[in-house]
Length: 464
Image (cartoon, rainbow, N blue to C red; front, side):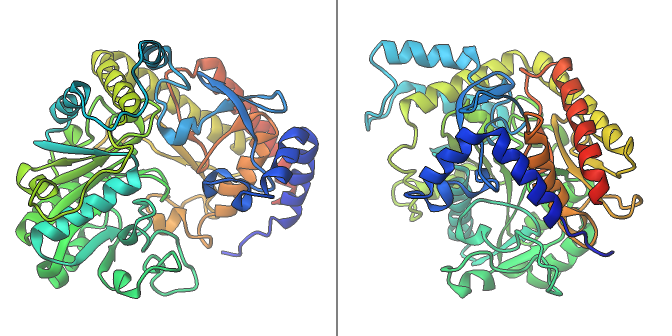
């Protein structure tokens, strides 16, 4: 299909946004004097400038221009209870008031309780904490290579495992290449890293079998997201998950689930609980952190042992690993989700279903095909996430990154750039086309999202 050129539309939206948020524009000009691109996390730095947030509560953030913005980004999808939920914020406030909470450099009993809780909800035998999802997936790769004595890592095309060497291959779709998801994504990485990464196709069991048949004796681990995040908000099928488990075991490779997004997002524990597949290792972050920097690698005791004394894998965790405030936030959040599992997950699932419907109907009203992914599947019975895609052909299923990230199949710029900026003019913030629903969102918020999408549809329709 012929791609659309959105230059004129984006220029119009950018000019309107400059008038809408002059204070954020001014802060961006100051930021550029000392910060690369005006900030320290690229995905947050939308063009022409990001909203500068002054406060956040529940489903909303307030920027320096005074706009109250309905937020579906929710802290990189970490805030399943909404921004600054009282259950966590009050626990932290009490800790700081009692002389606890800041860095000590020592260990404490809370780390033990948090580990016990995480293991009990994930089926893991041992856990070690760190402070980011990127570090967790990197350490999981170290452990896999160290345990198996093999060097090759297999991943899914379009899967994001953070800014770590083996994760920075096969992330973005490269339409100019016959191997669209097999490129090294960053300068500065040794080429030898990419040579030891095999990319397979998400939910393609036949291709997975072929990859293991061809490379199985040298694969250290197969790492993938059971719920694909930036690749399009796509759930894995039961068939694919069970095949991954069986083939990994057959060929002596470790199965690693990257549950940085999915852990505690669809139930009060690991996504593995929902479909009866236990990985050898799994990584967790985001929701389990309760709004603080917490991540973990958890899994088999014999594999995790390599992280300990004499094990040979340098998994130290970092200075801020198990930061007292982070452990308190994590334990408080997980404990709350366990206690309220029958309340939290049905509610956010119901709201997300209504959000997906509202968005699709809003664009359909202007003759624009919009398809929302993130729906429930045979492996995931409940989902509070959604991404919007604009396929050129309405019959496109949008069930693989080869579709959702291919600009010849879906209008990627429309969903990733145009939609985000246009909705921001309506004081709604989305990421990857939409985002995640939290307990703080309401029926009225979903109605507001639908109305904002209707206004955006009318605004952009003349340019399509």
